[in-house]
Length: 352
Image (cartoon, rainbow, N blue to C red; front, side, top):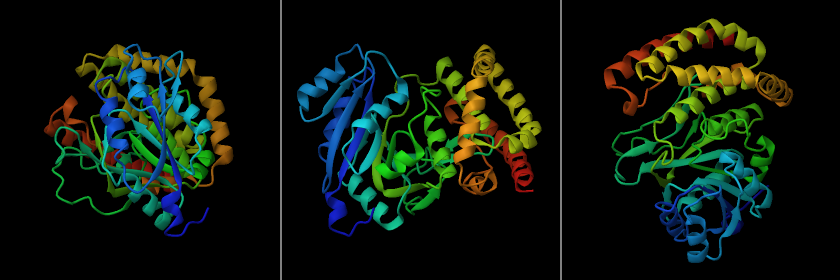
């Protein structure tokens, strides 16, 4: 696919939005989308069996949207429906708890023209405090732990440089339909959380990088449905291990397993402190139940990989920042120093 300056602006962008009981936020999201400047787009709204009538309210207010009503909640997998019916040359996965700025698509399209195939993330700012950064790039640690660069900082332009990142945030990911089809569908194993980590990691497997485009601005509420609930902790931990067990080669997974187990002991301690040890145990039993699917997935992904683990982890980080919502700064710094030390050892082992 090749574009010049004029025709890329004419390209159709298919914006795929998932909705689940989003009455309080979805209208603001759509209002902002229809104020988008200099871009040609369609909106596909996929409702995951909401019971608050929000999807019907949206269709009435914005009759031009294409509304798909699922009979059950498919989680993030519902995006696959949007991919199949999208007419655009480009796709945007957009969460309903976002508000976009007018030139957000314009900058994505320009960035694609300059940098080519890839997954693109905007600069995420808070909705209620737009001077505060939500994410200036999503980062993966070698142990599958993730954090949002710049989160909680005042935006003073310190993250205004285009960069390669570990993966793009699921709240807003822009890509060509070519890249989307090369990576494949959102995997139903995840349902929610870490599906974006998996998607970005799978992108690296098939030579589709992840980029941060700071000129594109999207405001994000973040986790409106589950907050820091036991269900969210369960999905985060289970899905982190699905990523580790399926996206690394078996050889490297075995090599770094002792270090992974040390990190796992720390995670267990964290869950005990939060009174959620049972959640951690349930996540482990869930992985055992999924063992055949996990093994099959690992075999499948390793057959299509174009890059080795050694090459892929060049785009991963060694540090890790616990969300301040779950701990304090002192604890976060202490955990970070330990994780960084272990991660560097794991990186050396993979690089041998």
